[in-house]
Image 1 (tube, helix red, strand yellow):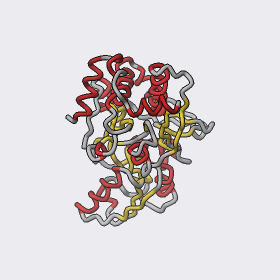
Image 2: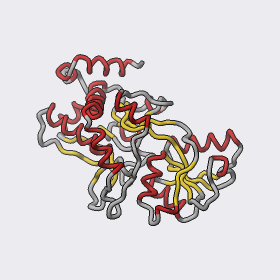
Image 3: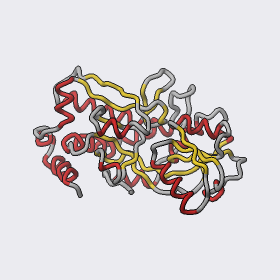
Length: 297
């Protein structure tokens, strides 16, 4: 375990008063500027997205707002402003690493490689990479995409996984890069790719907002489990401990399951009302019982 994680754990054990007596670059910046900069996404449904009223919404966006509420309370800054900064998979990590963003909660995977640049909170979602295809495509599993165009969002862990799968198995997949989740689905919807690879929950949300959801299905065994978490500055143990505590409290209090129901099992305000319809997985049930910040890779 790293020094930063040891420190964060110790701070949580000592309690809130001890945590807030420690130095924190994030808290110092927020106190000095009166603003907290939070990364936002336009189409990371149902985690962080713009709804039909062009308002930011989503499960992870609500987690971010709970962090803002905690900052307002603990810093005695009721007028603390939120500066939403739109990010993409390519820009989100650099903007946290260089201090432009104080927090980013969307659909970002925590792994050991990324931990060299930023800190990750407790996990709030567990996913696996799969394929979205037309039901009449003939594609049922990963070997079926050999020699074909497969689209993946640039700068994601899914891109790295797809390239490795193709190379290791000599599938000669033509990897097509999309700038974001919406373009990812558009590529396969318009026939420029036979399959879209992405985290399974994102694929299910794409099907839910497709013009004709009945045409589409998610196939292929999950290639690896991944842990979604919020990002913040590296080596700011105080701020990380605060975000960890908020997520853990949500899970232990039942608040997280209420958010899950709101965004995964009920209609959300996208395209007049869509439902992702993804029940809690066994991995998610285990995470709620034991909140933690462990990556899978």
